[in-house]
Length: 282
Ligand code: PAF
Image (cartoon, rainbow, N blue to C red):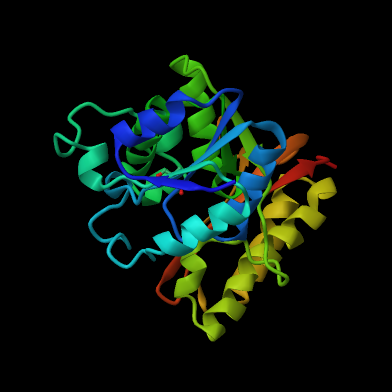
């Protein structure tokens, strides 16, 4: 099967017109890696038609962020998509997605968009949800696949689909890690070899926290924090242990699942990672 690359909404509409069966979408900002490959593979197991979107969405970047240096590798992205039998790659220009310039009406993420990533990146999730809403309208999928690595994004997209009645099932796919445990991200390409070693502290901290889950929330926080504090190369933004649907800090003594989330700067790169821990509250 050949993978077709389309750039415009009209081409997309034309290419989708003759397709039948269940449609799955994997949305990306390009620079595809094995984490994206896994999203596609999971989609492929269920869906008849797979659409990958490649769009570097300016709306979700603040002026001081890495929009201009974000890797652009469309040829390689199409090649990876072809290896995974993707039907269609939709790679629109900014003008194609935002023909009237910056949209005046946007999806507002609400309070869940103000914490964790949203506290450090104000407006980020409004930008994400606005483009995801547009891409859902344009691709009309039955199922949309997102990675657990961006846990807050995944939660907000699921809430948007539920709260605003988008006719799509949002499916979460587990984080893919490299052999050392580093969560795969298009931004890992910014890391020097030395940064890479320091970056492993994040997943190590999550593992150390998870190992203390039976001892309760405070023990988890302390164990994860000790690992992060021991590495001077980590510029910690936040370490949070939050309830999985409301994202509020869990008090000690809480039992059940909680999200241990971390964000930190390593060299010039901001990284995030998370793990779900099952608190015993002992
Ligand atoms: O996770 C991403 O790559 C982006 O935030 C997304 C969902 C493609 C929206 O631009």
